[in-house]
Image (cartoon, rainbow, N blue to C red; front, side):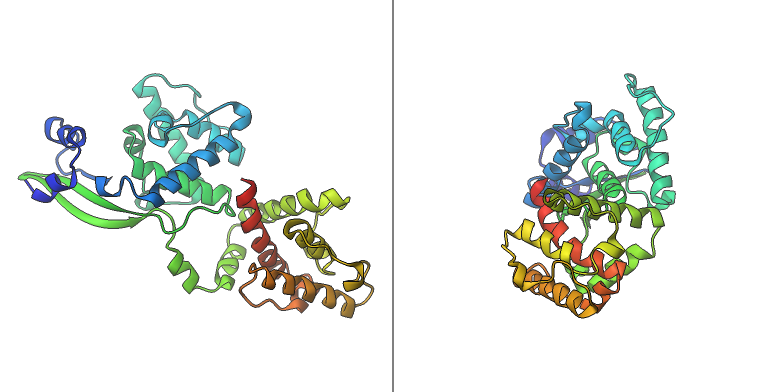
Length: 322
């Protein structure tokens, strides 16, 4: 037997399961997180983040998840999560008590997920079997994919990577190989790309995804400026004069904006540019804006430019509120 297999699994219960049970059929491969990564702080942060996100999402349904592996394997939580996030009606019983029914339920759920995410079978990092057997790596990949699709603005912890061991059953015994696998995106790679790339990609995606981001940003803005009696419903028109943007920054950053410093009811392009430039300066001074923005794009109602600016505030304060 490969000695690395023994070295990797120092926990007797895990090792014994592979040695005494026929858990890997001949020719089958199984990828697992090494025990050396099980106490990785970043991994624990992601697990806690996803647990809290699920509980927050399903709060009204009185569903409480304590363990991602133990509470998601039967499909019940995933069923509720998809119905809540995507308004999807799944043609399967919500409660499945037997393994046969759980397997059938997971099959339906994962088929819907693959269809929503437009993924081929070869692209999937999870399976009915892996979720049913409480495989943490597969469960995390599945939840991250669901979160990114249905809540694209969710600030998932970046750079979460784990050491994995792939075990393959061959005629001579068990063959293993080691690797490092990212569960969430590598921030260094993301930062190497311009912010334009990220938003350009969003605008080239399915219109429903773009609309979901717009809706999230508008709800965020309306939640805060609504306290001032304002009702914000349109990104293209209601931010071009800079007034709503300035009031939003004031609400979130705790600024007292003297009315003599900006135009509350701008009547010319020059006055609108003044407001927008002031807003961009405040964002830059607060460390929220670290990429160039053309104020004329905002005044001209450029949706992409406005959304980039709004996301700077959203990404900081939405995480705090959560």
